Amino acid sequence: MSATVDQVYVPTDDEPFMSERQRKYFRAKLLKWKDDILRESKETILALQDDTANQPDIADRASTETDRAIELRARDRQRKLISKIDAALRRLEEGTYGYCEETGEPISLKRLDARPIATLSIEAQERHERRERVYRDE
Image 1 (tube, rainbow, N blue to C red):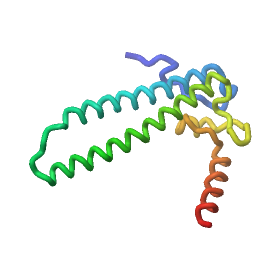
Image 2: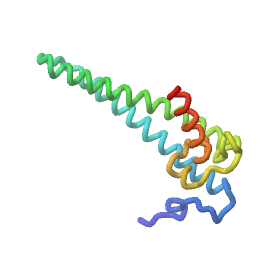
Image 3: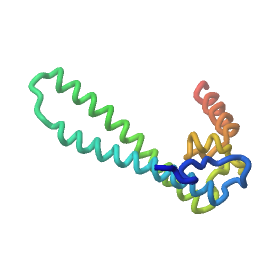
Image 4: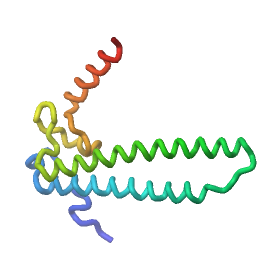
C-alpha cells in the first residue's frame, strides 16, 4: 500500500506560514493525538472495572491501589492535555494557531511539530521559565 502525499507531508519553512496545507496537517495531528488519548482513557476505565477482584493479600491490594492511583493521575494529566488540544484546535479555526501569544511572531514549525499545543515561541517560553524560576527562588 503506498502512502499518499498528505500522509508523508511535513511542513517546511519554504512555504507560507500557516498555509491551508499546514493548518490541515496540524489539525490532523491534534485530532489524532486527542483520539489516541481518549482511546487510552477508555482502555484504562475498562481495566479498572475488570480489576475489582478482591485480593486477600494486603500487599497485593496495596500494590493494586498504588497502580490505580498512578494510572488515575496520568489520566488527569491527559484530561488537561485534551483541553489544551481543544484550545489549539480553536486557535486553528480562529487563525491564531502557530503564533506566539506573547510576541505575535510565528512559532517555529519544528517546535509546533514536536509540541503542537505550544502557545509561545521558544524564546518567549524560555523568558517565561526564567521568570518562574526567579519568583520560585525568592
